Length: 277
Image (cartoon, rainbow, N blue to C red; front, side, top):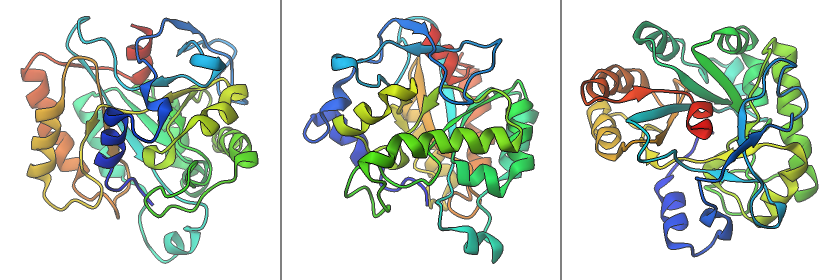
């Protein structure tokens, strides 16, 4: 299952109505990462944000607006814990054509991967994790929501949130991903204070976005491309998807927006570069 109607999440953060954690500032000073289980190699220490108020897991939504025309394309590799039968029946939760396009265009990107996806596609997970063009980050193991009423997703209980995230890192390690990043994206983008507190011991930075591509379940690649091009600003984080069955236009969108944004003077970077800048 992928993010649907993510505009509502962004609107909720803007209004500050429901999720008090949405007010977390994206411009906290970077600090050395505290490694999550199997998240960081011995030679790598990617930047993370300092804990938020009350020591809560920090939340990053976009980078600096005045330190160059950089933009991070992020792709959610979604697969819930209970979708194995659908994959066995032929549903494609991967998108090799999209990854090939990113490589051909030489676009650095961050892939937020569920542990279940890594188990289903270990060769692809390993390939992404070992390609310096990409960085693999955590999108939970199960893709179950960390709050109630999150676009119909099943929910993970509060006492299982930390274990679900750590289980994803274990799945990455078993698939051969050597250096998964200490960044976490909440399924559906849904989180609250309880969820942020539950993940504090893991040492991750929660990564949201400021540009919703609208590629989930979209059939009009031109409309999605326009939405991305109209939304990108310096430091933007764009949320897209890496699932053929639920986001079939994404490869075409990437082939359209990448040259256009480069023509506008934008440079593509990974999320880690934005956090560290």
